Amino acid sequence: MIDADLQRLADRDQPALGALQSAIWRRENEFLASRKMARRLAGWQAGVLALGILGAVGLGMAAAAPQSGPEIMASSDLSPDRLILGDAE
Image 1 (spheres, rainbow, N blue to C red):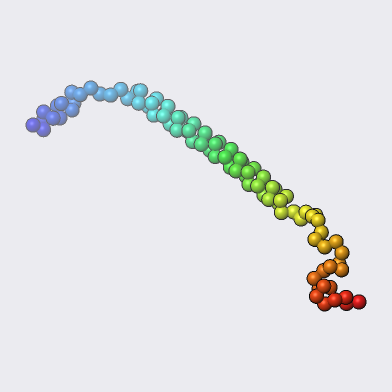
Image 2: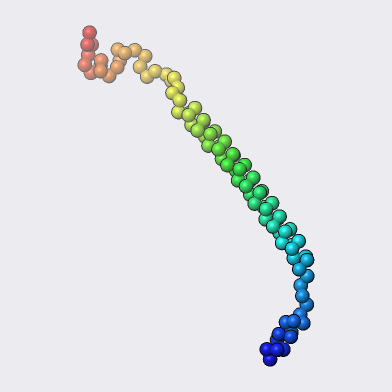
C-alpha cells in the first residue's frame, strides 16, 4: 500500500523549475515597484499635508492679528470712571 503511494508520487509529472525562478523574480520586482510607489505617494501626501497646515496657520494668524476698528468712546469725558466719580481735575 505504501509502495503504491510512493510509486504514484514518483510517476507524477515534475513541475518545470526553470520557469519558477523567473516567476519569483518577476513577482519580487512587482513587490519592489509597489513599495517604491507607496513611498513616493506617502512623500507627496506628507508634503500636501504640510502645505495645508502651514496655510491654515497663516490664515489663522492673519485672522487673529490686531485690527484697528472704530473707537467706542470718542472722548475720555464719557469714560465710565469719569461718569461715576465725576471730574477728577
